[in-house]
Image (tube, rainbow, N blue to C red; front, side, top):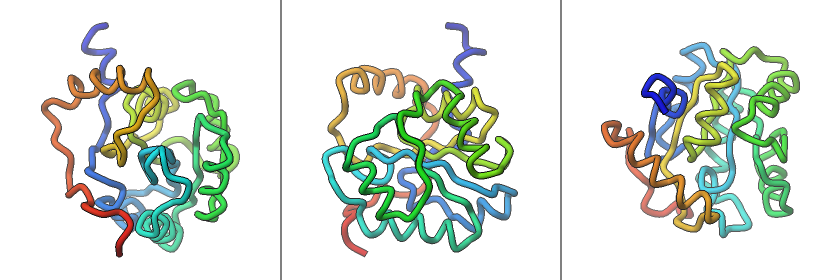
Length: 178
């Protein structure tokens, strides 16, 4: 793969956690909505409930005027419970990185791709898919160390892509305390 093609995998921004992203700053930059991954972005893959700090961050996005939508490749009960807890819209089985789920999110929210930002923990699904759909893409460090087999393998590629791009902000020591 040529370096020019690799740019699709490189995030526009890289943060230690969603907690380091200022929702008001996103609005000031012209964004009107945030698409969110769940597993290892808002909660560890092994958890059944979104930590309060993460749910508060999503609420701050909404209070800032950002539409929120969870875009997930999963359709598991625990992901559905997380979406309900967050009070946000949802598209499951999105087949990221294919752009179809991202386009569906645009239609569902009534927004253009350039008005949305995707926030997720995987370059080869969240970031690549957002770029293929013409969206701004923010990568966050994964909250947990438990991943699917193919994800563990692809995280090695992440280290190559991100080797000269340190994350902004600090990784939260404990996502469960306020």
